[in-house]
Length: 208
Image (cartoon, rainbow, N blue to C red; front, side, top):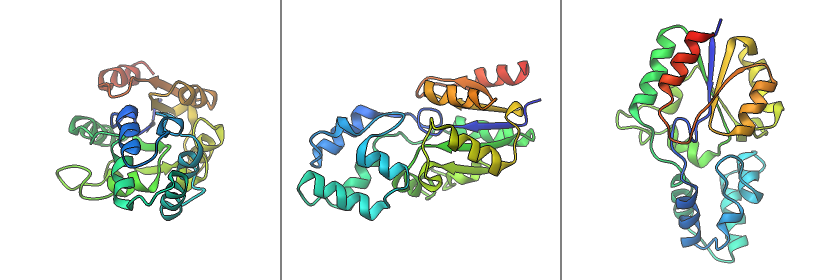
């Protein structure tokens, strides 16, 4: 019955570290970083960046303007990347296993060009492979101009991928995102940030 599996990125494929990112943004001059940084949906300028309202150049310019100081772009990018750990090989290998069993595997992520440029580079994992190598297609909020848990982003993905919700499982660590996917008719797996969810997903696949 299940033909498609859709994964979130932060909290599922990579562990999210909000407090670390807050510390690093404060260290470069964003004194109230905690107002903007959230594990599931950022606020203010950070939201606008992941919603595709501003590109990287504009984000960096506006951040410097807000902070009232010139912050090197490299420092901003490093602070952004510090919010997540590198992926663990066993999770990526599991994605390959799913695809070898004829499941379609998709990514649906609230994300931004700074994180994705790293994920698409040879720095993503030691083998030099890119995040895109592990999925049939990636759906990213800044490209879609829409952010989870808005039902619109789920429906856009469903329509573009040509999948049936009843034949799909959505995996996320965000409760609101899980509810939105369920409202669209998908089976769901709610996981904890950084957890090993492979056994739970395998069990769910066997049940459905």
